[in-house]
Length: 295
Image 1 (cartoon, rainbow, N blue to C red):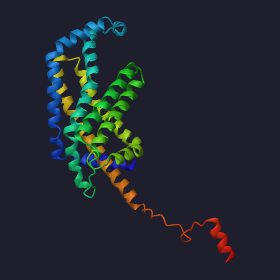
Image 2: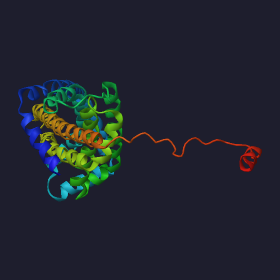
Image 3: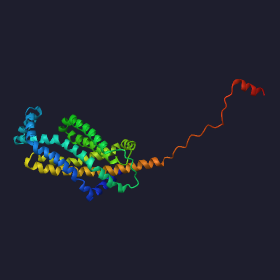
Image 4: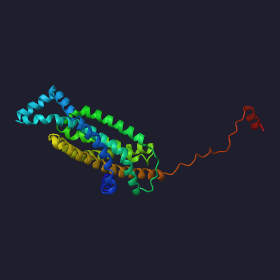
């Protein structure tokens, strides 16, 4: 637990470095162009398809009945935008993690090398490996989101499931990228086995931090004219939080790697096996044995 708080403090200090703040630019621009362009050009078709789907959904009729019962008929118009925002959030966050993992985390690790100058590089990962690892983890994450999505509407699951899922995805992506240059594949697997719980705790904490811009985005979906501006601000907040998480995971993982190598170096090497004592063994035939006994 001390390592978690120690790495958190170091990550907080590192986040204020101008170089780390500059790392938010490229993922922010890519995400804004991708999702901003998609929503700009496809908002009307998306909303039309969503409203058509919701009009035939039993769940929507229940929601409308509940709104009517509470006298909130005017909120019917925001159900479709909120539905689109809720579906888009997992895709947006997953894409942000991929952009940051590919473009920003290597620079974060190079920045952290100053704190671990004696840590040799084993190059157990690669950019291509990071992409495939992120895609595989994202696919599992999206499948889990679809399976658990009905539970998100039931308390207390709506407050428990999303941070755990975000935490799992974040720890999977960030751990690989943080150790890609310095750890071998065997060392990375050993560290994940040893520190799985602390890594998941860091991931869940990052997921909770990411819930703030998520709530801001969902609430702005009801006010259409503010949505593009809030979307841009939300994307930048996501990038900032994920850069911080990269620093947090980086400090934790590199320190854990240094400790692992120190432990292995402290174990004395086994001496070579000694030859069997008692001299050479000569295999004699039975008649030779009798001749020796009679002599």
